[in-house]
Image 1 (cartoon, rainbow, N blue to C red):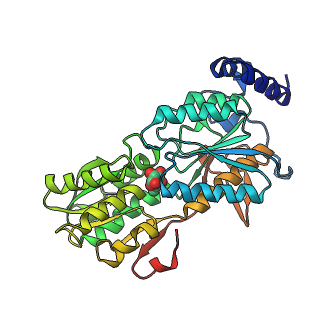
Image 2 (cartoon, helix red, strand yellow; image 1 turned 180 degrees about the horizontal axis):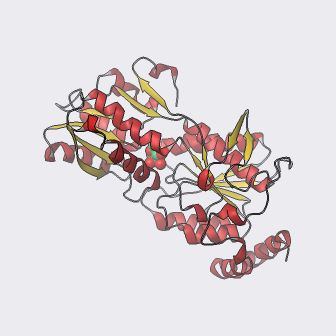
Image 3 (cartoon, rainbow, N blue to C red; image 1 turned 135 degrees about the vertical axis):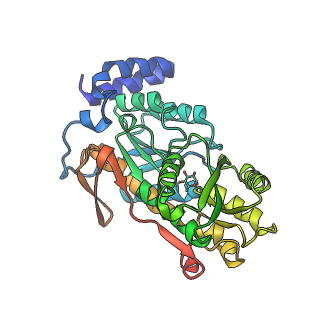
Length: 359
Ligand code: RAM
């Protein structure tokens, strides 16, 4: 059966029966399309870089968490790009960054609705795999953005920056602020978050360099991208480690809550804080001396690139294989190893430049 007719049949089954049955029926028929043991792109046929950009598509965005301003900006970027390309945007997602079951059911919802593509920021590297493979078996292109799943569970990953650069530069930023001496801690997001865990691995590796011999990483705490939990975790870190010299928080929710705690405490300006934050969240903490410098990419540009990647995949311009190139806006991107596409370099914000940014 050709894919287009399969797609219609599956939509018909999905409309008249339970999702599980429809997914089994449709998924089973095209199982060979997606292999378990290699990247999804490996079995996706040949790309045609000159293929016309399809219009009238629907791309579903599924962030880690819908009420997180970072994802609001990212997904707005996706919406704007899709409107420009003549396609439709929709967004679904859980309100908690630790609701992987919720994310799985949203993947299934989008599959049942037969969107043409979905852009997903995964709360967990493995939990979504079965559902995402079912989506791909139903001829839906899957792009992860911000936080990846496993390469075989999506067609491409749109990464905000090189994960290695992000991990290493956060350590470098903090080390300079504490004169390369003292105890430090990390305040992360969810314990399972693929993006934060990858960055933390690079932070640990960076810390092995001899120049950091007087710095000790004493704890990794998890605030689950929840403002209150992140605030309490920061308070807990300071209670447990009264000599703490610095905190790295590689999450926009975490760094904001940590800054809020520090700025109202005796540690303000003494315990250094860096990581990943939005300039709009962090402006007042930079101005009041709580934070010297931190970094981020423009979330709207990440969402824009995720949307354009999804449309390029559906249009057949790329399949997600290493070495393929495609144009997104004015920039040509080359797909790297394991189907990873890098947005670019993050920006470091400090008192000098923060007023130039509005996101
Ligand atoms: C939070 C989320 C997101 C991460 C940013 C930096 O908003 O954890 O996944 O990329 O922080």
